[in-house]
Image 1 (cartoon, rainbow over the protein chains, first blue to last red):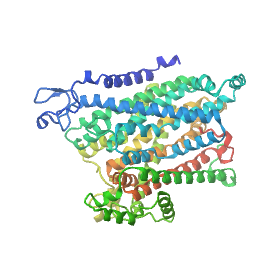
Image 2: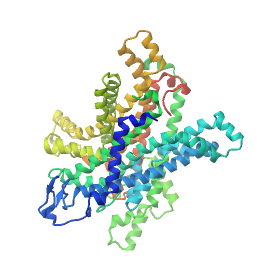
Image 3: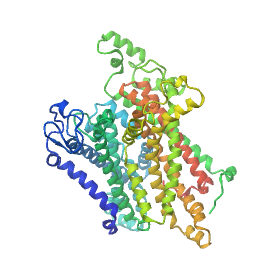
Image 4: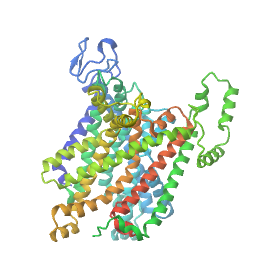
Length: 280
Length: 344
């Protein structure tokens, strides 16, 4: 793992992700003001980036059609988008660990059933399911977290399952079991440490994916609801003003791409650090 | 290494039972999807009859409409009746438009298959070329630059990339249309003009879906080739004095393609999902758009059919990928599943 520190991808990914998280956490400081604040709509709308509106306020990324500051909305929307992504990832990793560990350590009919469910869930078109769930119940940030979490656990489950199945037949684990180690102990001491890194990689990629999907749902009006800003509904609101105010849709999209790129770079770097023969 | 072509498959015995098993699993997936959809739809709040009749309807009208749509019967009975009708090809009528669902889906699926299918072929065709080219590069700087480009493209949400392309090609360059599958005057066009009109409308949705897809494929191919490059059989091939180009194509790329083809099958649900957003952005008249409209209007019969058709398309795609894997991997073709190099 020592190569990770010298990997430029790890550095770039960590810096980008760190910056995005910092802006989101420090939103009230780095982007003071109410993200939903509207003043004189006609006078302050569609101010281009790096300009002052007629009232004298400076807008780093311009304003949207209601005269709301895009930078402020981006920073506050980041709290929603990153928060939804993080919570959804936490749910799917927990669920994946549980399903994978149970199926890997208990074997038999339960395991077959659990892995059958996992394979079935993997074959589903995820967005179709997301659309259904999000549209059938009242859309909200909480529902989006739940839906994303419940549809994203399969990769982790398969990773943990594969690792657990491979480990339980290894002599040192058989020995531990012979000495009276419980399944819980085998899981904690032997399985979890071994799957930690691949699970982190899967979580990083899953986090990027969850953020993209949240934005997609919000873009279709089935996720986080306006006036609460999320990067997805910001892109949606900028869609109608692509001609005269492209910055409204461009800014949240660029933020989204940077965060997902950061996750991919981090994931790649960690994976290569795990498999030294492939490191470049 | 067996480099035999597809022609050797005539005496296959090991592959067909495997395919039959997978087809059965696929059928189970489709059945599972529509069962899940059916019960989710009925469990959710919101009543299609109220939507259909509006708030002014009196209770007697609502009750009559419920009976007419069969919504007053117990859930299992509704499910059994619906499944029976669905299997016979009677998909009901849309609650919102009153048109037969089968007609709506019948009109929509060719557009989706055209978009997704062309995009799949282009993404993987171009993606494999780019990935293979990257893996063969000696100059790290070029490889890094291309990698940065593919990582960035791969990270882009399709609908946002679509908007950016619309901004460039439609609003700035006035070069390509951004909405629909044909121009308003399409019915008056004949011959090549008509084909050109269709192609111009296909261009932006296809470009959007393909750019994201090819970035993913290129990343994966590059990685798979770098993995394979260190294998003993590649060393052996080099030691035998085979030229670098032939080693790269016949030994490295050929073996790297096995996991790539598996990925192709696994990426179908994602590609189809991406198409849902792309169809929404570009008003492309496919199954995804029918689905989004149906979901937003709680149009039960339409949502059920669109979901089932999505699942069928994904399952068929996965089966095709299995056939392709067998084609590129002789070990699978001859039923020696244990030796398969593809990740499970």
